[in-house]
Amino acid sequence: MSDIFISYARKDRDRARRLVEVFEAEGWSVWWDHTLLAGEQWSDVIEEALDAASCVVVLWSAESKKSHWVKTEAREGFKRRVLAPARLDDEEPPLEFRALHTADLTGWAATEVDRLRISVARFLGKAPRVVPAAIRTVGTTRVHSLDGLTYVWIPPGKFVMGCSPGDTECSENEKPAHEVTISKGFWIGQTPVTQAAFERVMGNNPSKFHGADLPVDSVSWGDALVYADKVGLRLPTEAQWEYAARAGTTGARYGAIDDVAWYSGNSDGKTHPVKGKAANAWGLYDTLGNVSEWVGDWYEETYYKNSPLADPGGPPSGARRGLRGGSWFSNPRSVRVSYRGRFEPADRDSGIGFRCAGELP
Image (cartoon, rainbow, N blue to C red; front, side, top):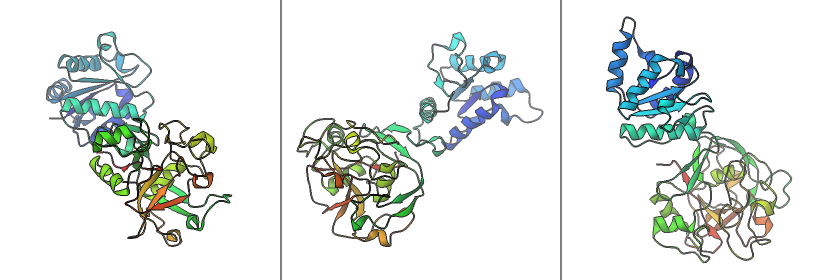
């Protein structure tokens, strides 16, 4: 007995195999005709597999629309109300199946594959696990059910952390610039945590400035940690934060300061709704300006001189925690991707907020 029966045209076998791998990464069992053994009666085996499956995924293409077998298998899934159709080519499914929404896999966009995965999970009565790493690409987004915020997938990679080339405003704590490896991908908030999300999770709002779409402010490091724990995440490390904020760029900022950040020169003395300025190349907003963001690390002035070159997590202890990005009242020098701020963990300030990172539950 298999969880999923996949119906497809023989010429689409390689594309079917790709979907099989996605489903098997979830731990689901899949029947497709590649598993037929020599000497088995084709029609008997297919009929038995269809009867046993909890979900029928049919892959529509120019070829499968011509197939008697694919149409027959699709009708069986449709009759049992367990059919999850997907389009492989820019082709509409046969007319009799157009009442059902059809997943669009023509470009294998990660979001579309993820939607199909979630649909199949509903048929199986099993909670979907995390998005399989094989179908995550930079910029893939998911809405977290616990706080309602959008999170962005950041892939593993390498970058130069610290003072940017040609940046004359760096402090000694941003030196030396050094290559860092982020060995594992992670999800990070597309925006700082908003007041609406904070109230939803924590039941209160400590902010000086008020508005559902404004970033929550006046939160201590401990407040941020409790929130992150409640939603199954954590605070990003300094290295993860800078890697995500740079988004593949090497300059002091990922755009002109007035285009990407609310700071002392344009904020009118207050925070502003998130997404009010341009996103970076990976789809993150407000990493510079609006509110400075707590990171998970203890702060050490000379940490870069001996920090690990792979997945640095900060010193083991300290008196202050790191802050990144600058805020609505910061001068331009503090609104740079390599700038390192610090406050005591219990401190609260109208220029301090946070965003979460980690593996979405």
